[in-house]
Image (cartoon, rainbow, N blue to C red):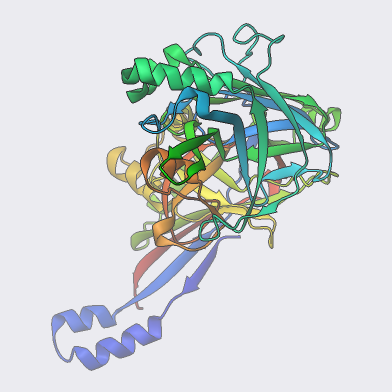
Length: 480
């Protein structure tokens, strides 16, 4: 129902009476009153659409297999190039003094979905050729590695360990360590000794070491969120003097998966028949990773017309907000609704998500899931309508009214906020000398960028029939 709310009319009249005695301006203001109009009678429609190919724009790597009612079965592994460390320690160490080496996959606190105690096994392969530049979530790594020649395997659960060395950075973490033959480290060491220039640029290093493929070779029931992948080498230093021979043991990260190199999650999601039936019945379903978005038809022109056709008084556009009720789909694996949704004109979505961007509250908006009220609320949409009023004289095209509602991962600038969980990885310090950090959520920090959601599996049903698109605007009326 359209409502008119009287706002501070008496207070405004009293204030003017004391500040403007016999001036014309004072008399004019005293003869007016302000009203705020609230209109939420708009109808929102939409439908579920497929969102199956996600660009490779993340450093978070998903590994595992999980099945759940009201979701389906997700299998995910990954390929990644590696950033070389420069320089390697060759001053006091020889190739003969390399003792052991392993790949370590580090998972932050709570970085998994599913059964924490289910035994699983990770297997690592070396890529035998360079990855293609055009790669997405449906990539098939067959042919890029030798399935008969794994570098190594390791069994693991999701039991988390306390960290003493990283006490200032993180509270706890989980490491999956895959030991490999020391010849891998020796080859890298010798290459650096003879050809150090290829270690100065990832594009040249990949001609020597194209990267790795990591997959699940045993077990199911859990998806792990790997925040950091690196290759660590243990070696010894031998020192001799006249009195005693001394051996020092040390280690170094030779290479790691970082933001600067390509990393891609290869995903295979078999959506459950229950979810497919809901979509067939017209339900609005959002599912990650690489599954479903919702396409919305918003009554943009109707809102503009309601505002512009109010001829009774001068009007000021105040705000537009969109609230969409959400329903969690019960499952036995702890799969919850997406934490964040992006609202953007459908014709701008692909370009926006294929590069580094953050919502600007002009043509792109985001909302965090409100678990208390079971909804998503986009509260900063005013500028979109002001832009249409200014640039198109209040006439919206069809493409201005069709929006994509897609799940995203949001990355914040932690320097301005302490909320959310944070983790830091010492690989960046080993390679570059600094600790970057990531926050999963924040209400006050600055958004650095958003990416297509792959952080964890998620699913939610939206109730578009009960969605509320609310317009507020002010009117200045003459007192009769």
